[in-house]
Length: 250
Image (cartoon, rainbow, N blue to C red; front, top):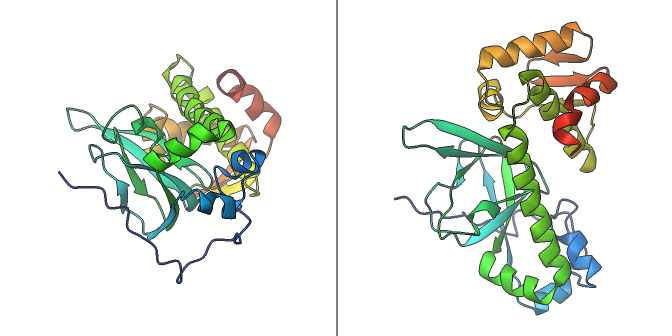
């Protein structure tokens, strides 16, 4: 079995957008740490090592299903796809992770990663040793709450797709959910590029690529969205929000 390597990034070649005291703008844990009165220098004194990883190019694995679990990683730049392979060899796309989001949380309950994580474009990561993160979380309740919050988001997203929602509702929820996540990170919520392939989106939403294309055409015919290749523009947000509401607003 191929072992996870988490290739290291030389910090002299790439630097984050923070300082010795300020966190990266996309740091998944900065809010929790600052709430506890901990800046980067204080975390360094506690020997919490954050390793920069990357750049990983499209198609490169962050970790593979079955690799020994030893770390979680926060996406700094790019998009990461997580997938599983069942016993029949079929791939199931679990999700797409944007800057500021964490991968590897679903491995906490076991000794191996239950899924694979692969770069969809040029990806930069921050790697957190989970044993060290666990020790710190025991001392900082705010950080522990943030970990639980991130885990609950993954669970909530999985339950959203497990329901008996319509295909149209799932597509609308995917686009509106992506729009909200991008807006929270300072990007345009109205016009954005899909870094993932249509086949991956369809797989993730439990439908065929043909069904996804048909729904895109219908939403475009309604004047709700405009699609140009991988670029999507939300033209009429209100009906899209209403269609997505049963899945997102729970």
